[in-house]
Length: 112
Length: 114
Image (cartoon, rainbow over all chains, first blue to last red; front, top):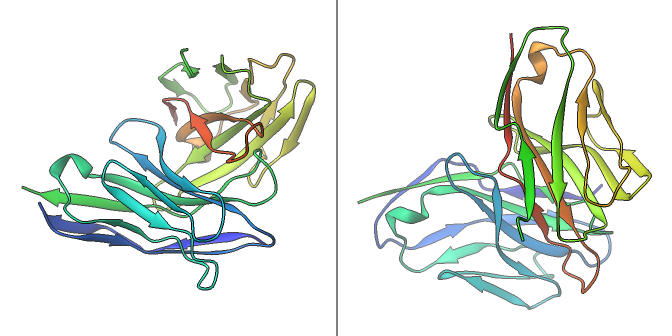
């Protein structure tokens, strides 16, 4: 069945460091791919998305490119800030809007 | 728009008690879902609905009931609470219109069963 695998955390970086959180997927057909972010005590918010191969989603300095050949959707940011500390979830929607499959989440902590 | 709202924010139950977690959305989305979030396990789908009057089971449906009498509301009922149901519960809605299928989440209900 469809699945999402993302790198395990926690990940701790210093401010202004480069970030990559790996995400790979298994799906039939052509899924839409998402990154969600969860700040402490809050629900999940959509960070960015890509709906077809080679699309690049971007928001708040984060980017991810839909790579069909490697079935990946890695999240990147060139210079992280303390305010980026959160849990990040990779997700896919393959068949319909009713079913989104989430990865297990990666906790990111940024040191000042 | 308020988006997706959930009540209550926090709840403590004793084993065997029943309760209903409320969820409402004002975006006219046809799809609504309930998830539970446990440490180290990400989000797991409990039940979902593709429209008023239609519900289906997700990955972990046991011990929970849902109904969808209107487009806006999707309550989750715990029939007889157990300590294993201690978790954070999130309601979400989404639409297939326009493609993309991203889900919009409520702020969550933190439930403790003693």
